[in-house]
Image: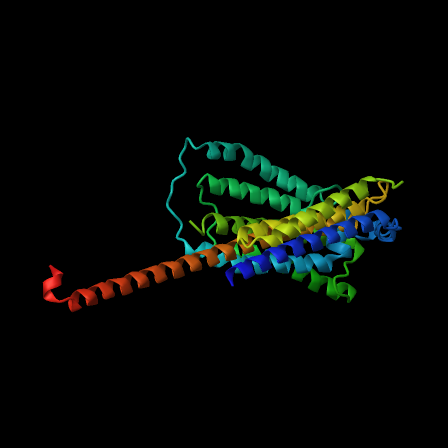
Length: 226
Length: 125
C-alpha cells in the first residue's frame, strides 16, 4: 500500500512537470506569435491627460482613469491590516532599550531623516514625474522597519489613532468620492478643475495608511512569532 | 527568423519564471516554499505586464505600469498574511504534537503503575 502510494506520487510529479513544461512552451510560442497591439488605450490615456489634473500618465491611470481599482486596493489593504493586527497584539511590547552602540541605530539615525525627505519629495513629484503614494509609502515603511530593527519603539497598534491612520487612505478616498458625486453626479468622476487637489489629498493619506500597513505586516512576522 | 525584441525577451523570461514558480508551488508540500513560489509566479505576471507595456519602445503604455505598481504592494501584504497564517498553523501543529506526547507519557506512566501493582510480591524486588 505504501509503495503503491509512493509510485502514484512519483507519477503525479512527472505529470505535473510535463504539464508545466507544455504550458511554458505554449506560452513562449504565444508570446512570440502575438500580434503587435495598437496601443489604443495609451493614446486615449495621453489625449485626455489635461483633464485629469496631473501630468504623469501613471498617476492619472491610478487615481483618475482607473480610480475604482485603486479604491478597491485600499479596501484590500485595510482588510489585510485588520487580519494581521491580532498577531501583533498577541505579544506584549518588550521594554528593551535601544543600545547606543547598536550599528542599526546609527544607520537609522542617518537614513531615517533622509528617507522621510525623499518620501515627501516622491509624493509631491508624483503628479508630474515617476513617483507617488506607493513609492513614498514603501520608503516610509522602510524607515519604520529600520527603527523597529534598532529596537526603537515606534508605533503602538493598540491605539485608536493608529487604527484611524490605518484606515485613513480608504476614508479619504470615500470622502473624495462623495464630494465628487455632489459635483458631477457620477461615481468617481473628478471635475478637471479640482482633480489635481483631490488626487493629492487622497495620495497624502494613502501614503501614511499604506506605509503603516506595510510596517504592520513586517512587525506581525518579526515580533509576533518569537 | 523571429524578431527578438526586448518585449518578447522579457515575456519569455516571464514564462520561464512562471514555470519555476508553478513547479515550486505544485511539487513541494512546505508552506514557506509554496508562499515563495506564489511570489515568484506573481513576479512573472508583473513581468508579462511590463513587457506588454513596452511592446512599442517609443510609446510606453502607462496602464500596465499602474497595475504593477499597485500589485507589488498588494503582493507584499498578501505574503505577510500568508506567513502569519503559516506560522499559526505551525504553532497549532506543535501544540497538538506536545499534547499527544504528554498523553502518551501519561498512558505509559499509568501502565507502569498498573503493572507494578499487579506484579506478585516475589518478582517485584
